[in-house]
Each structure stands twice: as structure tokens, then as C-alpha cells.
Length: 175
Image (cartoon, rainbow, N blue to C red; front, side):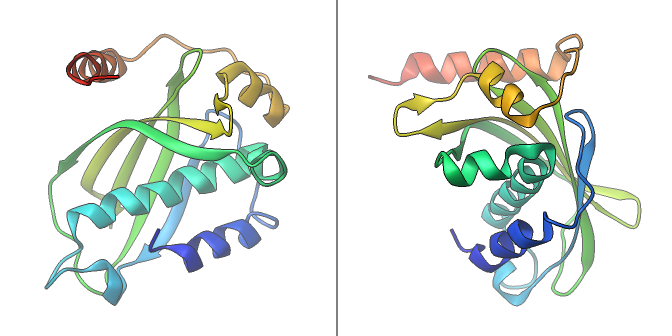
């Protein structure tokens, strides 16, 4: 991953950042750096990599930092989709907002919004899980590790559609 220094910063800053509840939003204040742009604007693949930062910040702040380090749990994205509206240019400041909007037995679903001066620039939806050497970790085990209890709300329509896409793609793949 090309964001090693930013991940290291997230790790250390998570010790003094305010912890988050499972349904709270992580907000990262970021700046477009020279290695984020292709020629004049942030590249599409970099948005996806930056979204990793948002989910890592969220995971650390909801109480998963210790488990991820000690138990060697690593994140895995299973499906993502993006809607781009406006570009981000070199040295512009922006915010990345990340929130968990639903989960099932194996997967957490996140909404991630890139915003500048109150204007939505891009929105992404991601299904993600944590993995160890034995495979994916069940959501209930991940939730237990946070030490938080929360009542799951109704599945949002966007997640129903994302699951449909995931199932269609899965059918095309050979095992």
C-alpha cells in the first residue's frame, strides 16, 4: 500500500483521538499530496486507497486496534462502488467521512464521503471484513472485541443493492 506513513500516523494518533461508538462517524481532515495526483487531480485509484484510511481510522477508534495488532486481523474489501462528482486538486484540503451503516454475519458495510467546504465530491459504499490466517472473522466476534453493544437497525436499500451486485459478480467467478 502506498499510504504507509499515513497509516502509521493513524495508528499513533488513535491513542489520543476520541473513541467512537459503532454507529458514529470517523472524520479525517486530509490534504491532496503530490503522490495522490495523476497529472492535475487526484486519481481514481487513490480515492479507493484513501477510503482504506477512513475504515482503518474507524476500526482503531471503535476499539479494534489491539485485536488487529495482537491477533493479526487485517481488513479485506469484498465489494466497493464509487460515485465521483467533482475532482480534488493538488494541495486542496478535504474531509473523508466514514460510517458503518449496516452489518450481517460476515460483513460490515460502510458509507464513505469525500467532502470539501460542505460539498460532496465523491461517495463510496464498501463491504468489508477482517481476516486472519484462517479466513474471515464473524461479525459477532468483531463486535465483541469492541466491547460495545449496539442494536442493528434496518438494512438500508443501498446495501440491498450492493449485496445483489456482489452475488451477481460471485456467480461469474470460478472457484
